Image (cartoon, rainbow, N blue to C red; front, side):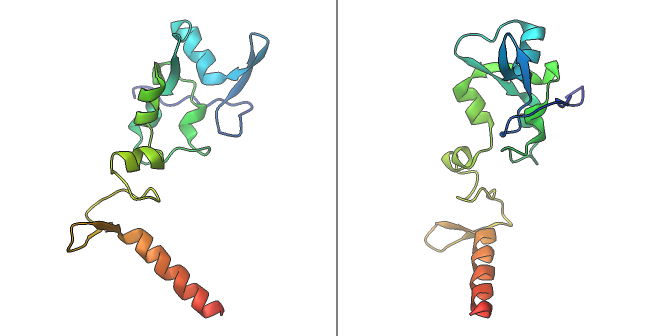
Length: 139
């Protein structure tokens, strides 16, 4: 992105999106910013944060700093399907087999390939082992 994010400085919803009083109701700040720059969001579309899509380190969710971004050049109206597929939710990652069930990306370092051709997440296996050892120590 050419310009840095412009985080909404005022109130935020529980999901991390900026909230503003506009048109007699509380609205999402990034949607209002988009409309000021580009006009109304087309019917059936929603506003996507391009800055989030370019940040591979951000896992999304309520703590995602991009959700509060109101930089007009970072916003694009897209269909719900496109917005969802651009995200990195566990469901999307599993659908395209990009991550294990806990959201860990399949990388050569994090993937154990069994002889039968299936794979296991090394990070999840290590987590389970730590929990098992911790439980054994407490009992």
